Image (cartoon, rainbow, N blue to C red; front, side):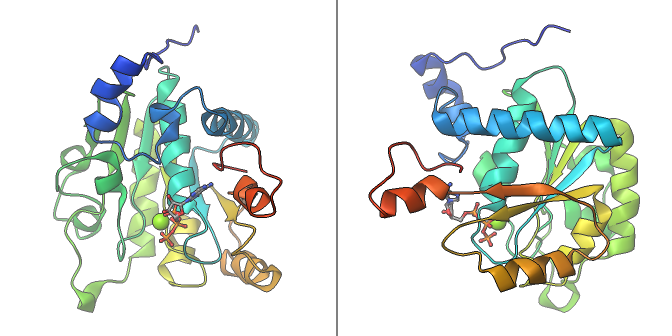
Length: 245
Ligand SMILES: Nc1ncnc2c1ncn2[C@@H]1O[C@H](COP(=O)(O)OP(=O)(O)OP(=O)(O)O)[C@@H](O)[C@H]1O
Ligand SMILES: [Mg+2]
């Protein structure tokens, strides 16, 4: 099937529908589709897509050992890259209920989301937020959980993902850092596979090993070396934009 070009690259278009449309500037897949960074995300998506097709996977959680490695930037751009292809149903899910940020990055107003779904307080259709361009669906965090019941219910999340897999072709889950929150292992176990984001400055060997352990039996699809060019620039060797390595 021919792939429709959903977001043309003309600057005026980006002004109207890119950042002006509410997407954060880190959403380079849409805001700077001709950049090296956007190109790297297309390559990453292509590789993930191939692996998913080969192994019959639909739901990928984007993980890292430590906070700030670039999980959200990676998952956001992966989902946007997939959505821009225009020929598949793509869903991006906020799996970090303690420090959610997808609603803000997507420029969406507050609405019901994952916390409400897991509590049984909302229907899936009421929580599916739709971006017109690119055609992406998102489930944001929803009700901010009280400190008292902030734990994520892994069994309910798995059941929810099973239902969502009937509605979507590709599902991407953002999640907390594996070494920071026990929720992360639960989110990873609800997905078909995890993608491990490494950031040269931040990801120490021991931390990566700890992350692999925290992933437990979850299938690790592969690793993304994020911000490698940034490190190169620091060493005086960088020639190209930083996102992603
Ligand atoms: N390749 C990159 N080049 C430059 N900046 C980046 C890159 N990747 C991520 N960042 C920036 O680093 C910060 C952390 O990235 P991001 O929020 O994606 O990480 P995270 O792993 O989701 O963090 P958290 O643990 O806070 O959820 C953000 O300000 C983001 O814009
Ligand atoms: Mg994040």
